[in-house]
Length: 181
Image (cartoon, rainbow, N blue to C red; front, side, top):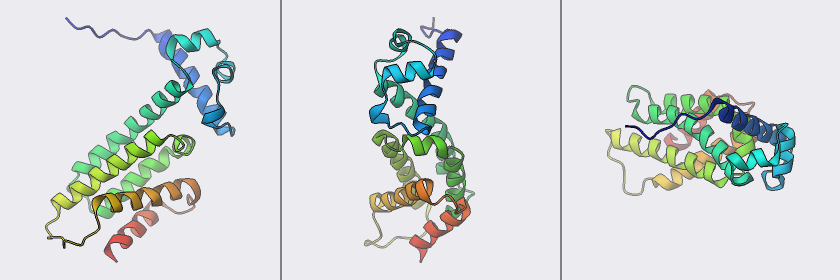
């Protein structure tokens, strides 16, 4: 017998209303550090008591929201990790396309260190898998996986924050050149 219970549809709707309210407030310039339960509840047209039925505090709500966004992105990244039929450049282009499609949420949530750390871990897995699948023997002084991952994350974060006028294909090519050139 399963102990999993389906969540009440009203509860799901209420949580969605709170999440949309947070995203709306953040997109209007509110900082995560200045969000309050009162502001979020008001933006959701709900009350504080209802908020506390679903979340411990604002950090709990923002953390769950970031987790959901990263789960959606992680599905694509995990697919790319195992995609042997794609070149490294093609993998990065597909990854960047996926990140670009979530850019509004990512811009808002990049203040959340957990989000950046999760993205780092996914990219690191991608880099490690590519090295494992490489038929070339890498020299001992080759760039460490952590340094390569950190630099890729830096480029991606810059691109999402300030460089969106560049296509994902262009950025993937630049990353490729960075490590092949």
